[in-house]
Image 1 (tube, rainbow, N blue to C red):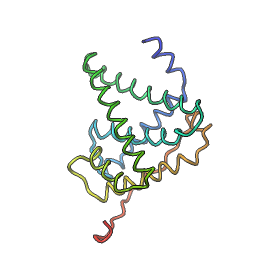
Image 2: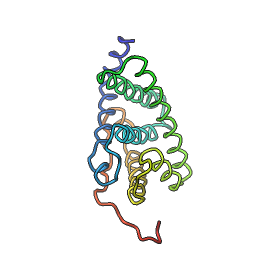
Image 3: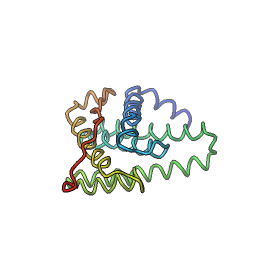
Length: 186
């Protein structure tokens, strides 16, 4: 196990891609303007959202791209595992928490994918409200996050696969000012 862990980390493009996902997820604007809870759960949700966008982009590509996406996914959860161990959580606790995180990821990815495929912004709004925001959220912030996800997916769609596989991922910048819609709009 440990030798395989270090061997997989030799692929710097996987590490760089994951680091860029995390860097984007940590953008202060998401917590300050979009109202994402600035908690470990909120940060996890934003990493999931951005990782999903990358995996969504690579889903229809060749085997090399799908293996790359799987390596980034594995790296993500190895990082979660390592982070929990550094916090002093024991083996059984780490296994249980990672299993829950993986299940959460797949649940969210399924909801996001279905909403995007069906062009159903209401379903995406509901998924964000339920998974990311919980009980306390401003509808304008959730709508802004829906809009941001569309922009992020579109931005990644125009990146050449070769660049993504090299770790050369650049996400769109999130809007710093949220557009307030009139009462009749929403």
